[in-house]
Length: 172
Image (tube, rainbow, N blue to C red; front, side):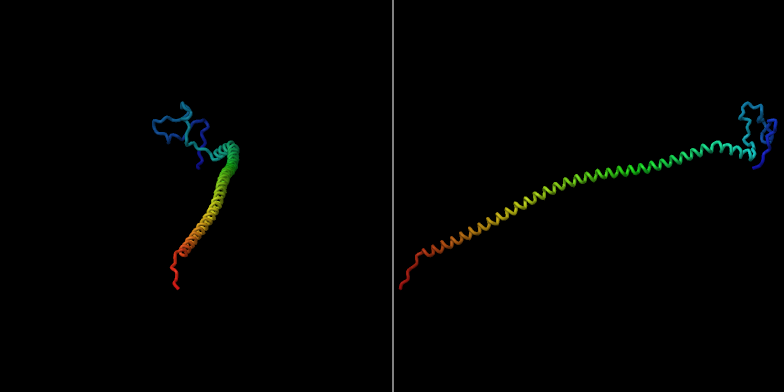
């Protein structure tokens, strides 16, 4: 950066004549607005810039550092809150799954009761069918005996009739 010349002590601006075109008013003390008299290309010494920057930094830096610490603390607190929230969500899911498990146990108990009643009914039906089979077997055996007795009776009657039938006497 080039070192500019310091402004003249009387407050008049110099060195503008080569930059101004004809017909433009010369900025100076006669201007009505204070902003019109400022020159954007005003050169400042490096030390002055350093002092200004140092002043700005010393003025704003403590506030910025406090803000940075506060933001870091807020970020940490937010991370802790997110972790806590995740833990609570997992606990809620566990409770919800416990409710599901309880519902499953209740349903299992209901179906177990149904199964026990069906088993009891099947045992009753098995006993009844066993009794019916025994009874059917006894009836079948009784019918077979009666049939056998009838057959034997018919044979005896046939034999008796055969004996009662007249036989021609033998001539001797």
